[in-house]
Structures are given as C-alpha cells and as structure tokens.
Image 1 (spheres, rainbow, N blue to C red):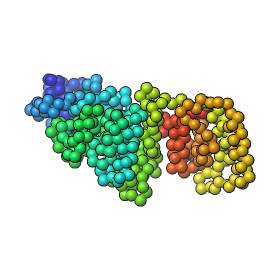
Image 2: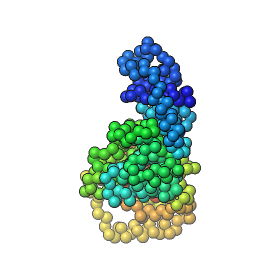
Image 3: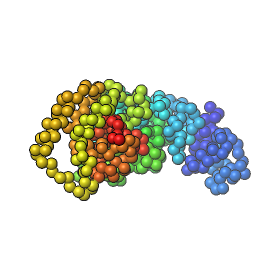
Image 4: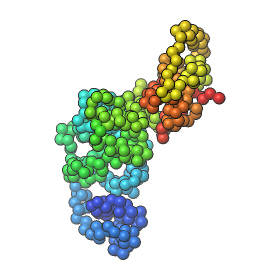
Length: 426
C-alpha cells in the first residue's frame, strides 16, 4: 500500500508525465523521487521540477480509497502484470486502473477497433462483423467503448464469446455514454475495463487523445472501420504507426463523408480488412496456438510443388510480360483462350491428389492481377517491391494480395512483408 501511494503521488503531478518518466529512469523508484530534495531533482530536470517539490499525499490516499470503493485494481509501470507492449511506447502511463480480469496482453493477439460515433448502418454492421470474426479467430478486441463503431465492435466480439478490453477516457467506474451500462458490465465480466484516469474521473474532452495511445499501445494492429476526414480514429491510426503497429481499414462508400478518412487510409497503404481473418491471418505465424481459421479448423498449406506447377501452367509468359502502369494488356484471341482452358483442364484433371485440406485451389479462378502479383513474389518481399515488380496500381495490388492471403497462397508478415506459400521460381 505504501509503495502504491508513492506511485500515485508521481502519477498525479499534473502535465508532468515525461518529466516523471525521466525521474523514474534516473532514481529507479517513486519513493526515491518523493524523498529527493531540490538539488537532486535539478540534476535530472533543469526546469519543471517544481511540482515534484509538493509532497502532499492527500490525493493519492483519496484515489486508493476510490479504487477500493469501485472494486478496481491498480497496476504500476513496474508491475509484472503491466503489458510490455504498452511499457515500450514513447510515453506509457505510470499507472493503470483495471476493472475485470486483465489477460496477459503480450501473449494475446490484441486488435484495436475504432471508428466514428456518427456512423452509418453499414459501419455498424461492418464493425459487428469484424469484431465477431476476429474473436472467432482467437483475437482479443480492444475498443474505446464509445458510441457507434467502438460499441458495435465490442458487441460483435462478445456475441462470439470473445474477450474485450475497453480502454476508457474516464474512470473505470464511469459509464460513458450512459446508454452503454450493460455493455460495460459485459466487457468487465469477459475481459477488462482499463484507464489511466482514477475512479470518479469524468469523460473530459482532452482525456480521449491520451486514451488513444493506450488503445494502440496494447494492440498488434488498429482497424479503422469507418471514419471521416477529421476523426479521433485517425489519431489512433497515426499513433499506431508511430508505435510500429499495423493499420487496417474497412473499405466504405466512396460518396459517404463518414468513410472519407478510412478510405483515405487505404489509399495511403493501410491493410484492407474485409473480414476478421484478413486481420488475424497476419499474426497466425506468431500465435499458432491462439489463432484459428474462421471455421475453427487448423490451416494446412496446399502441396507447394503442385501449386507451383499449377500456377505456372496458368500464368505462363503472359502475366510476366504484363505492361507497366499506364500500359494496356493485349486482348487474347478467343481461340487461344479456349485452347489454354482446355490444356489447363487436362493438366488439372490428371494431376496427382494434393493435401488441400480446408481450402480448394483452382488456378483458373485467379484473376490476371492475382497471378501477376503471385509471380512478383520472389521469397520474402516488401509491399512496395511487389507493387513495382507487378506494374499494378497500389490499390489493385493490395486487393490481389488480400485474395491470395484468403486462398492461402500468400502470407503477410509484420512490416508489410509478404511470403509465397509456394516456392519461388528458380
């Protein structure tokens, strides 16, 4: 209890979070900072040390009583339960208030889902679908539990029996919006409500940008479901990029103002998210025991040698000689197309049995863009290199990659690298 008192004393130095972190790094513990004199503080902080000369602990003691009344736990930056993902961001919160049971977030594929409060019916449906499918695939959904997209994503995850982490811009004992009372209870029962603000803190406007850095900080990636050009969801996406997280976006109506920001993220290279598996497949190699396909079956890759043989028979020289951006693809004569289809059909009909397991692969089903992108993959390749080698517009290449991931022909790795699930040509 005494140690927590000093942590709260340090955390309640108003507007001094970066200075508090600098002092903590130097002194090692909050009580050492508390008992340091002015000269000791000056050695670390040339200016701005005055708030740390105030040794009153009335507010920390009041907060501790509030935690007991609210039934919430207090986790400090040095606590073993504090997530390493969050600890390693630029400005981690010194303390976290937790209501519910906080899972080992570092051992879980946590995905943040954010979006506008003024969402359309499409956005609500998309958020519920994405939350549901992500949870079904083994993901933990993190959300701000605001009205609109946040709440819809949480409802979808809970409906799938998944866990939700609600990251709040108020105290964990404050329901905001008030209409979300039952949702807050369900989230606390299945996962946890967390905040860096003490119990009793109202939902003040300036708290939410601070909340957003925690939301992205505990997550592997942030999915923006629907957001206008000026949106807090875009702030969260920007923070995610600064923290080295992946950013996903759900394609929206090109004429809807509420989708302009999220569609803009796609133009800038965000990962398209049309389903929960689009997101979770990226992290399947990192969490093989946690992540499962939507049908709950394990993924087994098709036979690599056969896939390369079948793709080669379909790609031929045509896709490899595809013109660069701005060029036109020559129209293939009808007789040639019929002959190619007949030849390919015979090769496939006579092919040996392959271990396709839970996916079925038919090279004839690939579009020319998908075949071109697949042929551009030469081992582990960055997205920018794929776009350049394929000669496709970036959006067309991203769309093709998404389909190839779903088919199991391509896997995405952190850092926007892609690897083929069939061996590259020699």
